Image (cartoon, rainbow, N blue to C red; front, side, top):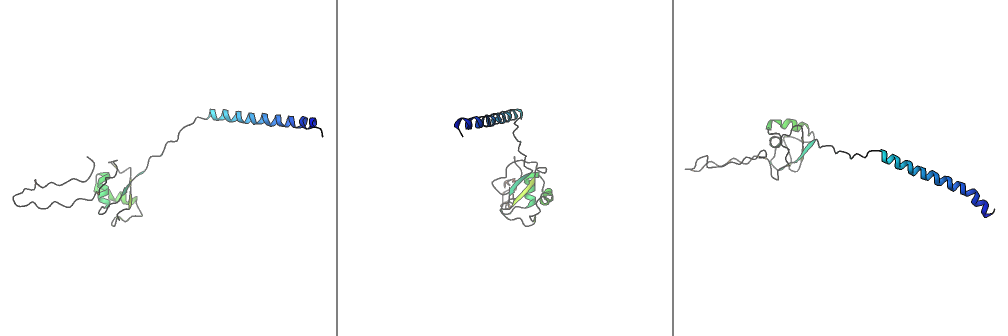
Length: 138
């Protein structure tokens, strides 16, 4: 076969491939421009995750996030793997956002109640002994 014959048979094939390739790239560009790029919106979390400190109970955690100790049962229902009567330090309690009235970060200290203040010494009134409020953000 001569060189000219090879070029004559391969030229139409190369030209057809080139034209198909250009058309595909052009179609891709048109499709890319016609699609509106919308950034996905992240789903808001459904829970607040509370790490249990030593001495905390479901009631104290409930009081911190909901303002009421009585809502501890609702929080316990959302945490079937945890025993509300025997919370271990380091366990994670999921507090549903639907219950939370305080959307603050977990405090860096325990929400367990402080020990009651000692009885006032003789001559000291009960007003002199100050008791700290540990629940709820100010």
